[in-house]
Image (cartoon, rainbow over all chains, first blue to last red; front, side, top):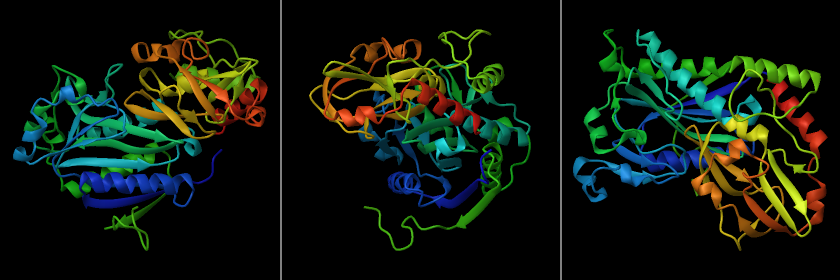
Length: 235
Length: 161
């Protein structure tokens, strides 16, 4: 059996997408060299559209030049998955963890990310489930409440999941979300009749679901971490 | 899923391996490991024939990835280094790097994978091959695992969690 597993959680508030990407690249490199434990970034982005490795920009329905007018950025990434939107009131988790140490393959890892969001939804009486084959993500009926896009490099993960607490859903109208036509996007606010607590509470619940599902015995919280870690610069 | 995991750990305990079929059935069990190939800990295989080595990912790897929907491969004429990534596969919204077990010059790339990425799942050792390389060092090939070693490696990896 494996030894005790430690997770270090960074609660980061709002982070610009590129800053988060650079930070992840540095943390992946540190994790690969075992300089840091499994790390989980918890954050939100300003309005941002992102594409995955397949660069499916045909799923962006407005010209890229118009994005500035609606107050959004566009970024190309190396993660799996299709086009998606990130924005305020959407809880994002970026786990930087060693899949080899935890004994998971890509498929099992993604299933656990789905379960994390399903469990959180159930706290509010929302019956969510994993997608059908080829539709990775978390759904409430035909409506998508959580998205996943992951990169695995030398067994270390980056990118992760995005859970819709109460984002501005109109932003999703400018894309074919995740490349899936004819399916709506939804949010926890829309799906539950329960009063929602503060978003900080929901973020903490999401983190707890993650930690429990992945079997972490020890969770260390890092409040207001700097993007630049102590004495180091992002190259 | 639960049945397959149970079957897999039972098989590992009994040290059995058998061919796996691409379509799920109750008889699907464990990953295939072929004799005569060499294996890396990151679950790639190498088939050395004459001056050319063919590289792909193992049945164990494709099973843990899920259905492959996209494969990124380098151009012929480029080079690969042992332990470094040369391409990636996407499955279940996850892109996973594929690393080369050996160093050398890329002489051919499997162009079928762009239209049919699922070949990696259905035929990981045959039609799902990824690149062919002219190895630059025979000692690198020697240092890779044989089929028995790799089978044991997979068993230990799966059993320890």
